[in-house]
Image 1 (cartoon, helix red, strand yellow):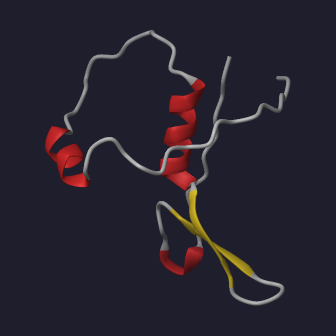
Image 2 (cartoon, rainbow, N blue to C red):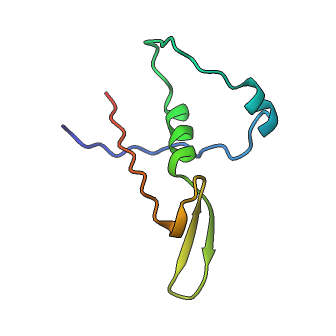
Amino acid sequence: MTEKNITLPVPKTKGEVSLEEALTQRATQRTFSLQEITLKTVVQLLWALQGTTKKEQVSEEKVIYHRAAPTPGRSYPLVVHLVME
């Protein structure tokens, strides 16, 4: 497997619909497409999983990054592995 660095687009932090609209429109999808998803979509999914929402400088030496999916004690047990062709 070859590693390759790529420049990622900046994720959107402002949605096109409200949270309430998104929740009422949410539906389970049980059919899947073989159509490739865009890098922009991948970036958005990764941001929702582990993205930072805020950077807080708490002292000269220490910076805290707040995340989209918070966990107790900032343990962040979720590990995301992305494999692309």
